[in-house]
Image (cartoon, rainbow, N blue to C red; front, side):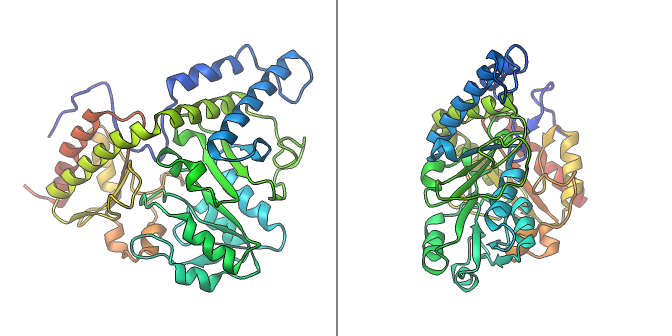
Length: 381
């Protein structure tokens, strides 16, 4: 069929699911897995060393996210950060609201708090008229992601915040910025947000560490109780190495983001144009002007995603159909359904996402492999 020009490597186009750890990040975290392994809640020298490292990472996160250091809460990842934001803001009786296209780490907690689900447009943007109909004084938290994890649709929080200010001024505005951090300056893009969630493994830190950033006026009900770490908001022994890694990765991303957006935007644009041009019945769900630079979602007619992904893997192209969150489950996309895409069309979705580790040859290899695999599945000669 076709050959991989880098036989010892994979064309990894699933960076929205996870990225490899950056070498500089691995170097930064290693001492806290070996020599400086003290529990930061202790009192001796090794404990103090770990605590100082966490404080340094907290300062970095606060500065780059536009929050006060006391508002930085380290968690186990994006899911915990989203859950803490929603459950913590609602307490026992609050009402939560979010668009229908949110990640399930937001959608399910919102539904647990008498969830009010907001419609989206066919282009994946928030339906502001429906938002106005949903919001009132009962709403304790409104959660809207900055970049959708499936479609790549970018959302402007400003008009959403304006509606919140007018109709539900007591409601906290939370944003899941897990996918956005690679493509936006969060301090600017989330300046109207009261709460922001991040996950380290999306931008070059290891899995198992995340952040919930909170403004000074935010009071959160703790969901994990015990030793009282993170100013009583999230108990549990700190993942010192992971926290150091997250701070290092965020600093590295901050320094390289503009160049990477330009580089990866061109690669993603090339990938989309070539595949749409080469595959009949293939189109992008979101135009390049409205999606994150490195996240491309395609709908391909007369092909089932699961079969396509299996065939792509045989030729060393790693991709996904949508979110990678349920043990490889291939359920119909709730994101595409909310955008009005029928089940038949949604069954042919393909998400190709790139990141800091992506090289030109991976794009070229995919542009050769994907059309051939589609032809094979369609039974073309």
